[in-house]
Length: 396
Image (cartoon, rainbow, N blue to C red; front, side, top):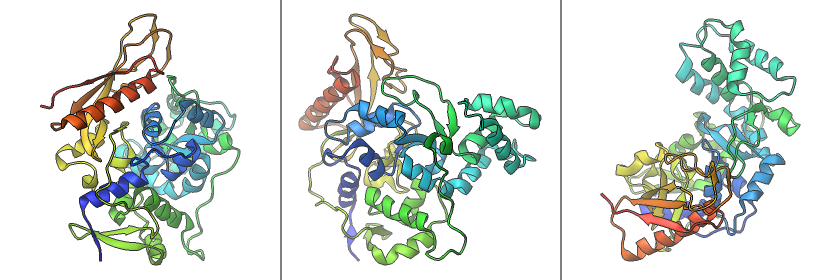
């Protein structure tokens, strides 16, 4: 069995994640290919797509959200994802049990004695009027039914697990700050979610099998543990077994089996990798159990801490944030804060926005020049052409 070293896996990952070359895909096709983008911070998917697509126009993604071509909903790992409408409808039922268990993992004691089916029914009845509500409003409206249960626990279980929900625009639109108002996924899209496959149905689990193929197309070669880490689903071994004859197998340097689609790109390990700026919680990092293909063990924690990272020669080589101030005119909500650095609101004057880069290792002069060039391009994107400022600090 062919052994793929870390650099070979790195270049394959970059190719699948559209990070080796800017892709000419339409925005909706890119979101579908990537199996969605993690989107806890509403503005982060814009940076993720800017780093991946040729001539990305953020208005195209905002338009898709408004026109209901993509949605913001809880799915993989119980985290907020930006997904195509079709994938959200097709995949949601397959994640139901996992979502319940993940919420119970946090609120099991608080939800003790709460009949979850009764809670779901009460939530659906409340939402039947079609009125968007926040999670807090939903929880407070139901709290009298379970007076001993913290409203937060009721709200989390209802919104993240029991009733498939979407966060409505203007939340998630480009340079817009808005709270999370929710309606059921089915009412927003005008179609019920696809039902789960009947137990023991002929053909097995078609949704699980589709998830395996789609994951490998966007993340392979990868192990079964990587697949599980990406989606949070424990019950996919049968789906893997069902499609195994379609797949090719490799081993990594530690002897673990990696599966892949036979015709998927696996570039030469010597292929040059351009500098890429990734948003917080990017799935290029979080989509694996073993993240060693893209980040050193010493920096693995950055991926779950919400740090934005810079890929240098294909690996995490720096972190980045946004600093902003006004030189002239005024800035309305230009940056939500140095921690998130998400650009929102409207800019009515020249903005001294700076992309601040902190290397994790010493960069060569050429690497530093490449990081600076890409950082200037990112600053121009975030400020809509008002700034091209970048500052690179010295590594500790």
